[in-house]
Length: 251
Ligand code: G
Ligand code: G
Ligand code: MN
Ligand code: NA
Image (cartoon, rainbow, N blue to C red; front, side, top):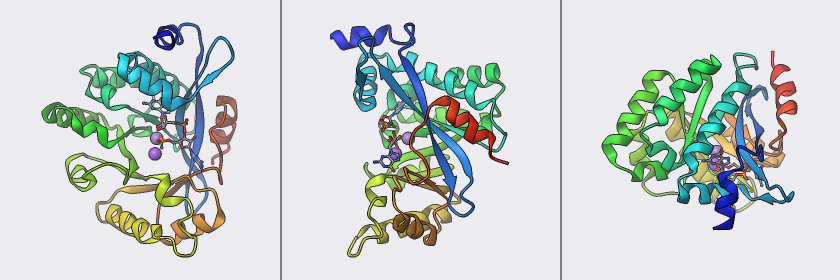
């Protein structure tokens, strides 16, 4: 209750910010994108874990306003980067189901003049639980706008395979639970990784392995043909100024 009331004014008080984590080409090790991740530092100086305030925002409907702020802020920033560096933004299921999502995306693209192809929306399987016709119509309109779509946290939900058929996805982000420690002896993750990557390749989708922290895991996912890596090995979520410097160092 109290926290919800506080979150309500957090945007106006400037308490929300975005940090940016690099996504790197597995082969060239060049930065190809950044994922924008929201942070909330309360007026008392305490940080609220992102999962916690995003869940709260989903429950009380604030996610629409917060999500719009995230999109606008991230797109404004990315519009200043070189053209080959994309920006990925997380879209929660309630936000995706909102009748205003497509208009908001179009509006942000127009205002920032960001190339739609440089905007990647990360959705989770939760999106598919809403009204089917609406969801499919939203996919259709986003696709025709030229925006890219990635399926986040892949492997952790239900019936992922049907969703791959239904949505015009450009990318699968393989959940950290399949990536971290995959190269360790006796790990069963390698077989799962191999299958996901080969499935994505047959469907002409990119893959990002999330949560790569060690050289062993990096080497493994590279051997398996995963196209991109995101993890502490290449960079933690960073402040906007550092992201800009890194983005602008890409040739
Ligand atoms: O960055 P961190 O590990 O704290 O993120 C925790 C969770 O919060 C992740 O699942 C991430 O996808 C989600 N998240 C981070 N930023 C946003 C955001 O701007 N919008 C939504 N919907 N989720 C976000
Ligand atoms: O659910 P989503 O994939 O959007 O969440 C991504 C989150 O995972 C980021 O917020 C980031 O904090 C976290 N993350 C990214 N790379 C690593 C990593 O290499 N190790 C760990 N422990 N967490 C990571
Ligand atoms: Mn994500
Ligand atoms: Na994820």
